[in-house]
Image (tube, rainbow, N blue to C red; front, top):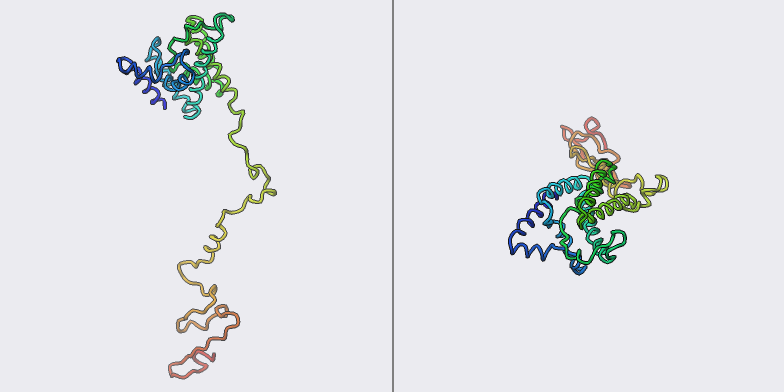
Length: 273
């Protein structure tokens, strides 16, 4: 995802250098405070990858790659995108609030002319991701470096981007403090009941009992065990009488003829049946 974000910034920066490409970038990703709110919200995801004209693009690409790479490894793709978009959107909407307040209010308000200033670039997302990671991972050095550099920027160069960076830091702090406050899912009753009260605890899977029973009844080596059958099987000569278990309940004894070498039945041969 870091490579995709970096490639997107390079792509928009390259096509913005041509007249037709500049028109495409303006229609897809340029966001200003004087635009209608639905149109600004529609363009905000694309504006995240449109580099600002007054900032060095290659330095921003390096910061973007590091921020998205570290965030993807630490947070996952979904949460990285949510934090990046939320902090960018917080900065974009805060400009509208400052313009609505108007000049004054101890320097919080902005004049209406600021509404025509281009508001694009991934800087707010980068600052928000670093701050969010610093809050949830308890990294004071990263937090001090990110917040301190943005605070110094707002003092040295108090422009619209500096204000949005501070708003992005505040939004990331709030998201970081809310991290882990809400469980991912509600535990099921069988997960919290003790083993004596849980009827399904320790029971084998469905079909496992019958499968074990079939495996137990299956003869080893493919030899049929006639003791488990209800009917007698043909026996080879000289193997002796059939076992009693092979005879079914209430069945008559099997009469078989046995002849000796002389051809007549006798006690010295098979015995009387």
